[in-house]
Length: 323
Image (cartoon, rainbow, N blue to C red):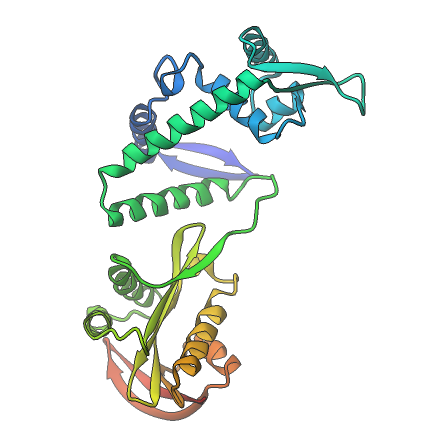
């Protein structure tokens, strides 16, 4: 059984099984963080009242109209009016006339309301810390990445202007290398049909890098978009004078943000910094997006050799860069 829905002018089919899975997750999560309790964070406030207090705190004392609050929080204007009356009776908010437009009434937190906001914020942070405390670092990363996926997928069709994604770069940490192996295997199987022998090769590269890692002349980079892993690259010692570029990957959903170019540029810059005279990389013909990144950093194709690996014939390539 499935539901047929009209979405942005197109009819979409949604299975009952998927609907049930989302409802099950929603019930689990709301119960887990206490959204079904009488008061949020052991307070006297409902979820909607606490959200209004939080939103008023973001106005930083400038005040905001009730209509604007209702629109921001997507609440019925009449319901918003009742919430504000409740908060006013409890001396959490104060109302004043706008100096710019005397017809408008601005709402802002009172000193008592600001203190209540700080208490709620402190309680929320403690609650989240308690939620994460029982998880390993890897489990915490998986949780944050999964939340980022939910946010990006469900927010993709919103009409509102979304903030630019936050892209950051860091060195590897526990859990990253397993992700590199997994994503290389999955992406290249999907795009080129490479079999599990390719995964074994990447796993061997990763294991060797970790076991023999020399921070004086080697380094890795993990790119993140809004806290979610989005790409990787590594500088590996091939000899005293030659560095090797390895493990370049950019997630399909993160392409177009300049991540690939930045990763290659960082790798080349670090090779120069540690004193390598030359860089080398090995790839196969046909990976054109990566080839353009190498050419942008002045890598030169020096050798091509026919071969067979990972279940397919291919042309192996060697690229070099004089530093």
